[in-house]
Amino acid sequence: MIIFSVGFENAKFKKMPPSFYGRKFHPLYSFPDVGWPKIPKRDSSNNIDINSDGVLLFQITCYEYIRTQAEHIGQLELRKEMIRQKLACWAEVAKPSFERLLRKAYG
Image 1 (cartoon, rainbow, N blue to C red):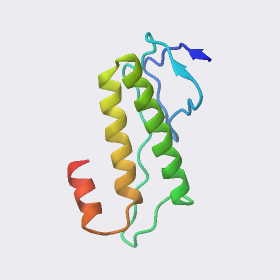
Image 2: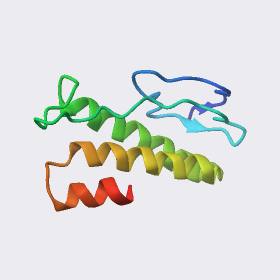
Image 3: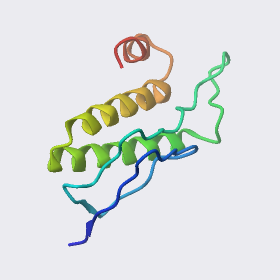
Image 4: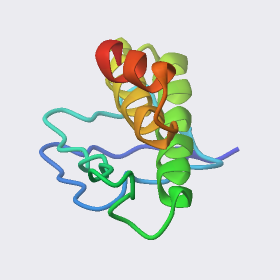
């Protein structure tokens, strides 16, 4: 088992969230004042401004892994932020529908 301990104070992730797949967070792991990447948005013709929905699905996977690790080490604020980021990604992946409107309204 690899325990990964590092701090990301004031880090700005511009294009993608970090991928920590396969690593366990140390309880002192910290993400204060981190800038998460903007969620790619659909334009008026429902096209996404990136190459494919695969990038959004990768972001969802990254956010979910960070969320589970944050929960494991008791960092509840980081966990809540990852849930918000993940729901925002899901809102963009969803096809135009009532469900998508609900995700945008409550996510």
